[in-house]
Image (cartoon, rainbow, N blue to C red; front, side, top):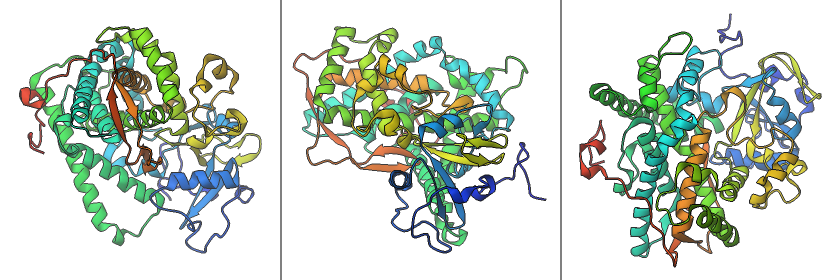
Length: 504
């Protein structure tokens, strides 16, 4: 008998033919090859963008076969809204996410629905993203932003452009590390990315390769050894971080304190040491990788649309005035800048897909029968480009799509950059506050100068990021004070990497 999950469904990959009894009605690309499937004209480095191209050709629901694996994709507003029905559908831990389980185990993002640690961790950690907790993180976000502006000031003084994706990665890693775990990776004091980032990117890229074009194990041995080394580095780093907290006693009531000390309010259960490790890795990876992409895309669009940047900058000046450090409540008042961020997430949601599975036999959107356990992948960038919802100019960058009147006029479940339902991103308010704050600080300090020869290229490693984006800077004619930079690692031992020391 086949091994099953706690939901009574077979473990491992479930092909579309198992869950869609009328699969033949769903279109697939032409020129399907025996054994290989729909591989002509695709690039294993860009599976998401290949799927977007096929979506435009095949319509709001289609299927693809890669070797012996068949997938159903959808992006139409009606079937996507149906998938959001929590009474009939739930999160499906699809192939790409399952490939991250060696890294994150039963962490919040990668847990199967039946695994008890998911609900336990969610209930223990959700108060860590309350308004009161967020207000406490705000000061640390300002301090890390000060390190970014200090770095950009030095690059400007040297006549250099800035590496937007690289610097946003440094910023968001330091922000989640400090606010969540009281740790400083010293990212802005390094010429190269911190080894934690290198290992993280390696594990994401490995999962992407396994997801996009499965290969026989014999051809994966070298990659598997490298991936195992990356996972070991992530584990060692986090184990040392947790051990340092246990040795030093209570921190500042951050996420790590909650993981170590908080019992479930009803059951009294606590997170195991192994699950604490997996949750910390989940937050460090997911808590900075997606936000850095969102900031990078937003800065790209602001640089390419100076009239939009000017309007957002005027709002920042009006709302924040000449205060050197805007307060927590002042960030939420940047309504137009938030629209800029939302429009960037519409076009390029940095977590670009989510999978949903049927919890009962059902019919999707009144048209496609599904068996319990059948699943599909929702292509978020295409859902966000559905012309029936967003208009024929859906490819155009226009923040006014998110003014209050336009939002109220749109059908529900058509904007999903953070997933949907009970398993949607628990840290979304953290990410939105951080990103809005940083964009406001950068806009009131700099004019953003695009490279006229640059054309947006999107790199994929399960998440999305602009590839090779560099911007020129000019200080504004009426400069304002920047947040004070926090001390770097050389100011004392607090910034020392707990595993490898300071010289990596």
